[in-house]
Length: 458
Image (cartoon, rainbow, N blue to C red; front, side, top):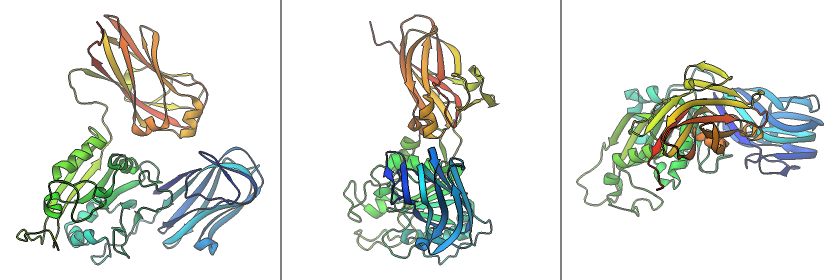
């Protein structure tokens, strides 16, 4: 299933009557309360959800349309006073369409905090065509990818994303028929954060795009975010020794290249961006079919001159690499009244009454400086987390000595860290989570990693 997510202040959402706040659209008038995001969607069953906050009232109409309203797929009349804070509408999209938008019009008194679009695609996907007009560099290996089973193995899922598919040639289409193509200018995309939910895609493909991205670590982490566990990220980049033929920037072949790549440097950037045990390398190849090594200059290069890598996203194991100064404690070693789906996780529902969400593991520590990393698998909606006032803290011998307010960004990264000192030769450390109010959403806590450093005082 494809899952688009647009926050209330996303530039892809428009209104003719709203006051735009930092995270929402405030509607207090009659007119076009919401329209957008003007995306291309394949055929399938589409469900749109407009997320509201606060008291709502007024009579309105919700539509799913394309072609600036010339074609309507579904519509419903609403009395917002009687509606839930999530407005739902489902439509059957019988063929691929561009410019799809969700509209809310009428006498609206509400605050719009977001728009969600889910699309369930049919499973009878067409077979790849060797003559498909994919990107220029992708065409060089496309027939081989079909013949070798590469596309069947890595790009046959129902939800595929290609980033940077247009390139420099008009008329290019995404790598496989079911893929969504994203490039600069895609609705709601700022060049770093994709407008899709976590774990949306079976595969992400990007050819000769990554070398153009300045904030490559942020971008790579966001690609990883929207990839499902077990999904594949396929990247192709120009080879420094074959295409660039230079020791350092600038590139003679393309002055927009931000970095040069060898297999070693590509692997290093992936490792630095994603960290330990986040992925496994499934394929790494240097493509040079048809390349003329006897050509003395790099002018008019022919053939293939790229590095291609396939990595698979894995579920991060709880353990870290043992360097002699760290100790992991799994969620099973903590106390909590929350649900335990298995011995290694605590599932926290922010809507419940409890103030203390977990505490433990009463770890013996010595004098020194420490860092504790709290680890998570899932994040709640940002609004629910903020409203609940979720706090992490450290207690030594039952006395709180450090605390940290948990943020949505920390949950997205899967980790939050607290530094603290113990000046006792022998003590017991406790790591806790609490909340000040009821909120919305869930947090899955998997444990902590405690790291030790020598004392920095005399």
